[in-house]
Image (cartoon, rainbow, N blue to C red; front, side, top):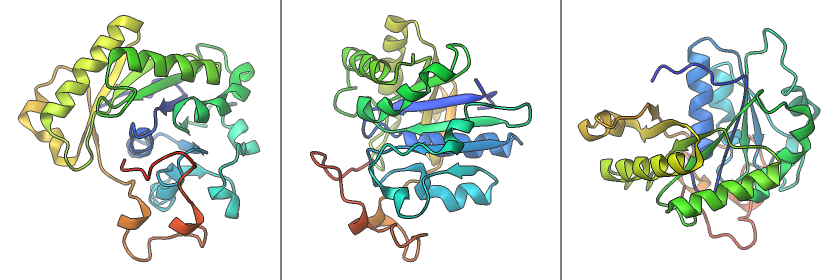
Length: 255
């Protein structure tokens, strides 16, 4: 899919396990491959296992500037907002696109409320990533409730929908088609546009997926949990499972 940047400030939100970070990382790489200057801010203070900062070496090797708290604070479950992140809201003519990978659910979206007064309503895109195979977003009503809670916490309006239906390695063309049907129903109810659907790797070339009548964004899997990463993949002494326990009340993720 050859898509133009929808806005110079793009916020990506979604519920826990929606795959929003994978979408954010792939979007940053796709825009950079087209020659667009890209900065990606990791605002996820909820999920210690799947944050865009985990792909920092890959992103920066392609020229994407990744903005995260420094040192051990990089993995702190705290609402740390760097001055550089605030600076990403004020874009000059040559500053390209600012992407913001926002923490899951309304808990993570609450950080955006501090940006509200600095962003006119028409100056950003805020996409809600939907995964029809996750609890709470497996029905149109659930997706609408999630959107309402995110918008209330962020004090910002969702402007578009992304269907990222998946079961990780068990994803099939039927799962993607099911996700598209759900997203279309949510779009019809909310009046929001469906920005694109996603498919991972070779699945994007499957005839059933290619035949779906929707913009298709091909993803490559970059986000891996610590227990599946290659040996020596850690970039920092804090980048260890023991240093980043699962937040209280949440199961170990399988995104």
